[in-house]
Length: 282
Image (cartoon, rainbow, N blue to C red; front, side, top):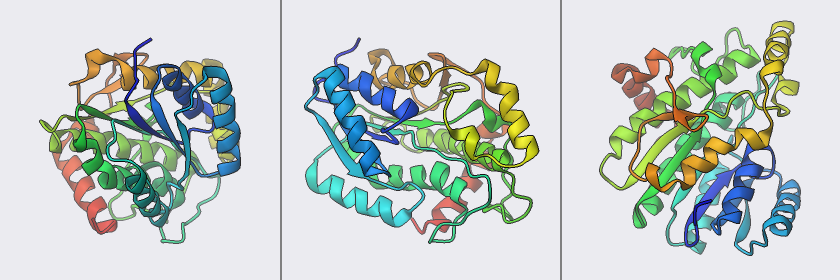
């Protein structure tokens, strides 16, 4: 167990699953943690549970909805009003939806929650991450990203929406974006890496619709691991001193892993980056 005393971390989706177990482990290492949650009632229950288990008095609950850019801006203002720096940002919150939904701002909800939200939150918090380096950005992706496909003419998946495909595409975006980010912030003392937790037993499959989506989910069920096991690589990536300067990598089972060939394409990375910054008016 590494000593995280004096380190300030933000973990989105900290109230359940991988986020909960990551928070619990880092709290046991004496980190100060902002539990950034959409559901404050569930967030408070999780905070109380972690506090009881670890004895930590350095847990703070804040509201965020990563599908809403307005919510992310509000979170940023509240965070920067209360704190002066940030050491670790874990973009953990994720979702899948059985039917295509759009946010109030007009974005497809899977892409907004899993990709646009983390992109926007990271952009907003980069100045804070640079205040006290070394610092780390950890984006949660999935091995499913290899089945994703980005159509720049239909980024919000208005045609032929399928739940698992939308989820996979959002994670493909996350992985390629993280590589592009790592290159752009190289030498600043801030690192950016991807974690693939594995096939974790969560409620994600329950939200997937359609016969093939449900069948595909059942096929991976025998390979599922617990959320606690799934959190191990996130915990390691956030706390291991040996990873202090490692950037632009994807990790699974505490080791570097290969990602889809297109994620390494500079042309694809740049197009995704430029398209996203224009879309979010950054």
